[in-house]
Length: 250
Image (cartoon, rainbow, N blue to C red; front, top):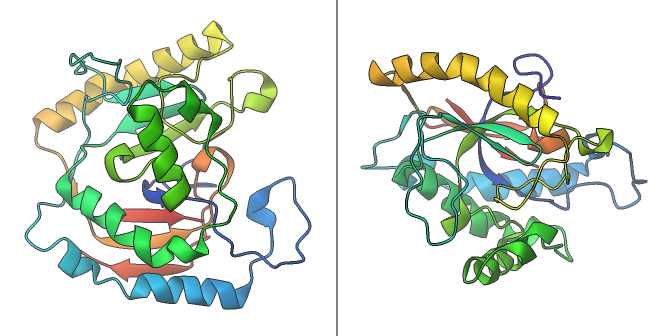
């Protein structure tokens, strides 16, 4: 379901939320990416983000981007979270793990307050949050209600989404965009072929990382999201040069 470089844009999501940017009289569309945007709302939204001095936010921070073998899936009270895989398959999602650096955390957090008033309300807390152990459950619910997403602040997990198994085809348990260890696959076959596909690339990722391959943050962009939290190609609304494209999905 993810077609990178053609239909979708490879990106690291800084903040994904349901923003109130559509026309008030828009009829619900089967694909929310087709809803008509309210130009006035969008202009105000982009102006709010433009108040952020991203260069100042990352001043003094190392903004090298690299893959990581630190999995998103952390068992409660289990510190042994390192493995030899540069990817995570969790629920409907297949993702490349990105090193969670102070630079990325700072960029993500800087966006939250300026766009808080644009988050669509009432905020619906993802159903998977209720399955988390405490204190993670309460923290995820708090972040959802305050910011519109549980995947910010302490819940921020940078990644590159490279696959999404459409749950409407009966291959996954839920469509909600999240990264918790509580979304189980309905199909072991689907899980296995995704694992096999990613393993073909994993050795190459290891060689690249051992050679010190990486990149630098070059800019921030706002784009429209589609199925599985992907960002549509040619949907960029605005770009702020900082110095790889990180996207704030709407």
